[in-house]
Length: 320
Ligand code: PBG
Ligand code: ZN
Image (cartoon, rainbow, N blue to C red; front, side, top):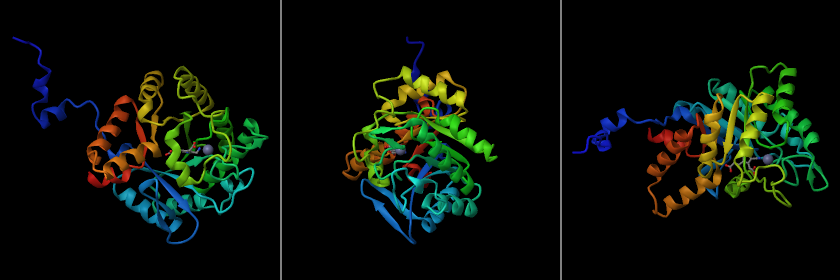
């Protein structure tokens, strides 16, 4: 007779739950919000069903609901009212992002606010930094990112999340925050951000597509994994508090490698294209939406993510 029968512990749901290695919770999730100018705006984003462009008033209402549902954090993205060569609306305290951060902080102080720091939504050319010809000038861009980070901290952000992939940005932002005495504002680095086609729907949502070329001179080549560890090492040395990997599903090998290597929290970004594929197939009735979402998010945790930025957060919290 067989002595070892792994099926013994799969006999019923209670037994399975006792030996389950990974448990997904709303507490693991961060919900992204897209804020726009105006009042009472709530427009669905076509390539991201059930996600909306919200004016600040509506973003505050949703933030209250998010907090009531137990989701601990939101990440704020914005569509500015004006764009220019250097993306100066990114640090304008009157821009939707800064206004949304302060209004949400005031209305729901316990909700953790993550501010996405980048320039691509704010520059006329759609690149993530200051141009010198067709080249994104790294060190000049750092100075601008510092301004964005400080403006978001001033508005009330708890965590600054730089998504630009310039070299040295974590150190530069840490210095700028400390100089303004924001010593307790954390940095969640998009440390391992690949140049990915999975960002397609987001670029529609945030109106941030590059007007020429692509982002391959700053975002990582998806063929590389050793380089990911180097990026993580640099960002930790520069003072990153949380390390993020992005996208999620096709990159869980990277999440697992990073998890094994470091003793700081790891986040993963379940990006717009991943969300859109699942939503689209679900709408067609080709997959079971709930089961797929739980399976995907659990896999991200199992790979080693401590937290997941996901557009599914609201759906998931509503089922629990
Ligand atoms: C801006 C930014 C992007 C995303 C987050 N911040 C797009 C990009 O780099 O082109 C992608 C998020 C998503 O696809 O859900 N740098
Ligand atoms: Zn960008």
